[in-house]
Amino acid sequence: MAVLRSATEVWTYQDAVEHLLDVFDSDRAGRPLRMARRACHEALRELVSAHRWKYYDCRHVFQTEAPYSTGTIAYDHTGGAQERLVTLTGGTWPTSTAHYLLVISGVPYPVDQWVDATNVTLRADANPGADVAASTAYQLYRTSYPLPVGFVGGGELWDLADERQVEFVSTDEELQDSIFDKTLHIPRAASIRNDQEYLNSLSLVFTTPPSEARTFTLTYRRSPRRLITEKYSTGTVSMSAGTTTCTVSIGKFTAAHAGCIIRFGTAAAEPTNIFGGLTDTENPFSDERTIVSVASDGASCVLDSAPSAAVTAVKFTVSDPLDIEHTAMLTAYQRLAEHAYTVLTKREQKDRLERYQLARQAVLQAKDLDRRVDLVATEEDCTYLVGDVDVR
Image (cartoon, rainbow, N blue to C red; front, side, top):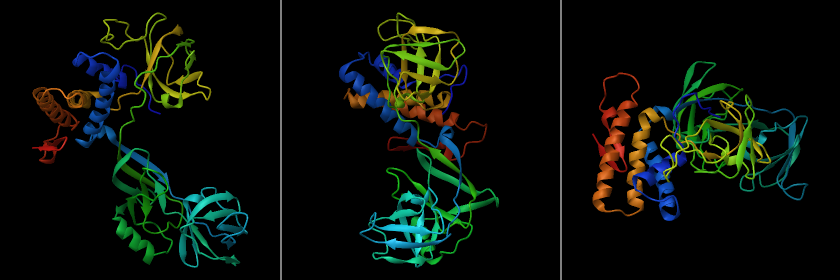
């Protein structure tokens, strides 16, 4: 869970919505509010696709699992305690067996479910089709590993033990290698594809079965945090000085609030951002913190750090952080959101065109700032995308 550094500027989903309502002199209600929220989502999607932002570059470290072949198996295709049941004798199935391939008579079958220490099931669409006698030898190995949630694209994959780069190949090449080379050895190549285990997710699949548990590191690009909670402010909150546990009265925190920004106001008024409220109110938040976790009953949450002073029964707001790096990306995001709002609300063509031009210029400036080091720009650095327009 990312924490909020002291004095770091952070914009929230609520801030972005109220920015649009300010710019277009709209009320925080009804269709204008709905369109502002939609524009915030669309602008974030546009911003992410416009450039490979360094803010979204990450590193992932993971360990492969060792193959297993202790004992022997029997396969009961139907009519047993469970359908398509594989029973192990003389060994113990790893609890993660559901992610493995079980090789019987040279054919690999995906394991469907881990039942207990000696029983697993195979998938209905991939199994021997008939009983397999007891005392049959087998091999269990894993080639597929889920990529981090929000994975967009990979960079380089390295085997840390051998200090060797692992090549990325196409799905077709990965299939060919897996068919013609079933020997267990150190993986030399991998593909990125959907392994049909997790919905809307990609996995890294090694071309050949790994012969041992090994540690790998992967550089990759992630997508930003989803915008879910625009504003939650039901009830009041209290915190003792020097503690990180925040309790709420009347309302309840939810699991979706983990990772959100909470801001504290006063007993009389909700906190506003530094610009004040939409109705000419001004009550800037006294503290803002990141919600690290939420209690199962929703009555309290844990923050990343204690507030500057105790708070007792004060009003508050909770909102998702805008997952961008504000020094380079914020202005571009604002201009893109403004343009998206003009499209969604069907404003005059002249207004839409002007907002588009402003957004394009802001993205150009943001990409220049995102070089982060003082390097001579290459031709690639000078290619900018906004929507479906390519500008050099």
